[in-house]
Image (cartoon, rainbow, N blue to C red; front, top):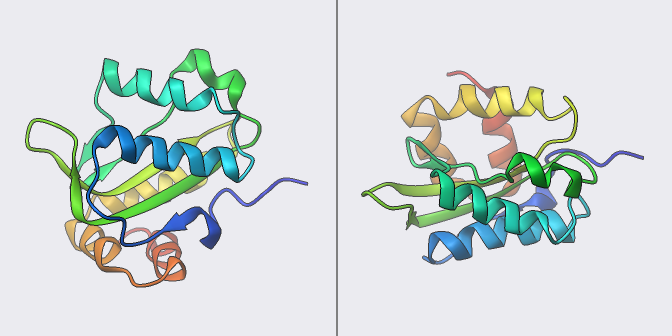
Length: 146
């Protein structure tokens, strides 16, 4: 049976400041521990970051594996780590929300669309940054647009 792409167990709040590599590893390990990807997928996430930043703007980074690592995906999944003090993704880009993504087929597209709609508004990012529960994070993403 397919797992939920995003559920409260996939969200960690109030993570202390750490390097972008540790942040990527954190959301990658969450994908592994929840059964969405094989361990090697984290290498693909690091390789992607080394090739081009996964910082998307508005305080959000979305690490994901390079195409050649797609075979490491078991099921689509999304993990979220909240960093109230931010993670430096280089060039002055600070991410407060780091979203790990593993997409198999098309079943992650809907939630990615909701995330994209949500993070385009700075007010929503501020709400994500200040959320107190995983349920609140999911609610903000589910609402999408403002």
